Length: 385
Image (cartoon, rainbow, N blue to C red):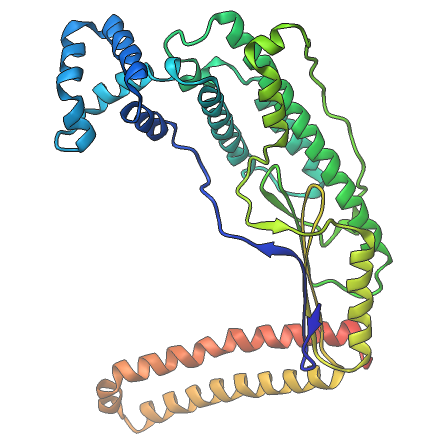
């Protein structure tokens, strides 16, 4: 924890880390598995390919395989597509389950992408989770193109996989919802008791990868409204088909691109520490800007608090106003002089340079207006404190 005497303070319980890939390219994964297959696996894939596409296609694949692998001969998308459809059946159980995870990841990412078109307000939080839950319940064989493929698994086994996937995804969704509500309840309580204004505050739900403005959380009643649960019959086929592995894997998957590594949890005392430190800094009559990131069980809370002493706010308002007046008066006088003394030739010569200068001066105005507004907000908020 550190701050600069001049006015800057930053607290973060969130450590940046390198970004990871956001999606899984199953096609490319299977293509590599085909070209890196051992002799026995290749023999099984080739024989299965022959059964589905005939002797001519089989012979062409055998004769051209080495050239394909070296890159000296290209593979048509149709041929490659047919070949890799035969690959999953002969992969190890671990690799087939990895494909399942990839397809589920892609399914969830597409479902979450649709959520961005909803009205992202706290009042709609339950509706948004409920919408994603409906997508999960409708999860079907059509969402597992590569995993199911050409009769890779019997229908009975596919149904087992689907039921386990739905159950695990739904449980993870419910868990995320409960965690988010718990985090937001803490935020609401602390914001209610904080006497100062908060300039900005957002809460990003990890599972949904969506951010919500929580600045007005004091006006909302944060409460948990249960989501529908799914049942799962834990019979002896669990061990046979590896559903226990799938269940454990899906329950611990985050389904979002992590942008950092968490090194703390969101606790009420963390928020208390930030708020009390901010109040202490304002008493020292320094200009203060505090930016904080706190990772909770269900998401990331980001806050910004600002304080400008009364004298500094007045000075900033006067300086900004003077700049605006100077720009307006200067441009007006320059225009009148050009018109009155017919100095159009000067305007023509300096057209490009003058245009850039005028554009620059006009760009100053909105910047200074923003400064004035911020200063007025600070004056109204804290007065002569």
